[in-house]
Structure formats: C-alpha cells, structure tokens
Image 1 (cartoon, rainbow, N blue to C red):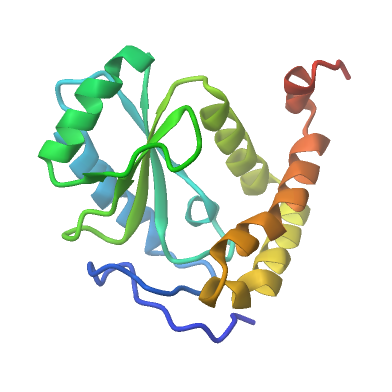
Image 2: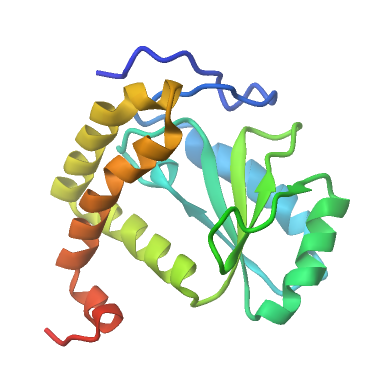
Length: 190
C-alpha cells in the first residue's frame, strides 16, 4: 500500500532527500530512545522533558520513517540555554520554521534521522501535538483514517511536501474537533 517513493532508512544517518509512507516499524521506539538519550545528555543542565511525537510515536500507524520528538522546557526563558546546549552537542539550529512557539533543529548525523523541536510546556504546539498523538494511540478508527490519508497523499512527498502536509490538515482538525478535551481550545463546553 506504500507509495513507490525512494527513501533511506532512518538507521542510515545521512540526510534523506525523499521519503515515503511506510507501515509501522517496531524499531521506531528504540530509535526514539537512542535520540532521546543524546538529547538528555545535551540538556543535562537544563530542566526539560522529552516526548516522542508524530506518526512514528503511534503503534500501528503508517508514517514517514523519520522520528519526531519534542524537548519540552518549563519556560521560554530557558530557550537560549537550550539552543546553546543543543548546538554545542552537534544539532543545527534552524529557527522556528515558521511556527512561533517552537525551535527546530537539524538531525544530528550520528543518530537515526529525526526532527527535533523545542517547545515550552503547555504552549499550543505542545498541547495540540500531544493530544493528537494520544487520540491516534487510542482511537483505531481515527488511526485508520489518518493512515489512509497519508498513503493517498504520499506521491506528493516527491514534489510538494507542503501540499502533503496541507492535505492532512482538514482530517487532523476533524479528529481533534471530535475530541471532548478540545472544547477549551474552541471556547465551548460539551
């Protein structure tokens, strides 16, 4: 069912140029732990937590074979120290990537291919991403719908990743909207 798009294994530490949507890989949790251990070492002097996010964090879900993770800090005041520590440990700081409230870092070449983001605990990026992950972990129907959409859009990964991501946004919004814990974000009560 995967689209025929060339990809590199995340265990191959060189940067990937293209990707594909693949079935769930039982190695992804171990790969996350390897990366998380390196982040923990880099941020040893900073109060932080680490969260596995994105599709590779959802058992049974098809995904691009890229490990996504959040380093979570209590306050925005810690961002300069976190950025300095991660850069000092070999990650390349890429700014916020157009999304205020997070900082993005290039994958370290000696680790499985990953996207590392630093967010402040409880900000919108943090809460929405974790809520979506947790819904997909517990709702088989939502997980199946999301996997089907990803496979449908997979050919865009070769030519237009922005369109790939945009093509998922309406379904993501629909899944989040069905979640009762989302009512506070909309200013409504259920």
